[in-house]
Length: 158
Image (cartoon, rainbow, N blue to C red; front, top):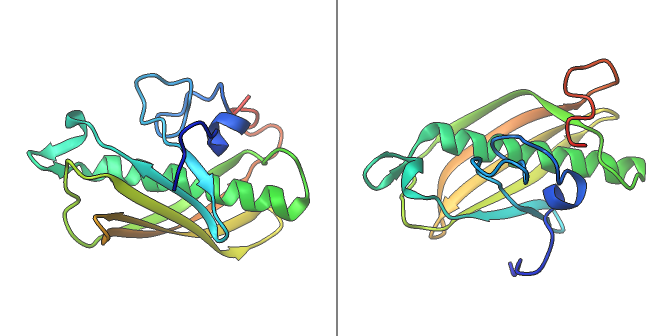
């Protein structure tokens, strides 16, 4: 996946977002960059030393943040496409679960994929996978819901 010079869905649709995981405007956050594929979204992430739980292994909370935000954007883009809109609805995490299948190594580029497995009018269930060097380290599933005006997260991407 060649991303140099391309804008991520976060940079296109939420350049002012301060979300810790996916906010382009949060210089202290993870600043994930997700890109469209035929099946959903994909991203690559290079952890820094501060993302370790102990020497050589990535912290589970960082893994959760990566998977949560990438899954959320996978849902938002799918809902936008389904509705034929030019901007995604603001979506929030209703629930997600992760199975840590093996330790996630530090010093390796992490590959994440997000794929919608159920799409409804205002929500999407997404399957997320994280791998390093072609080995699956974590799998997850989440339900992400579009919020309406009046919800505290409405307009959070603006």
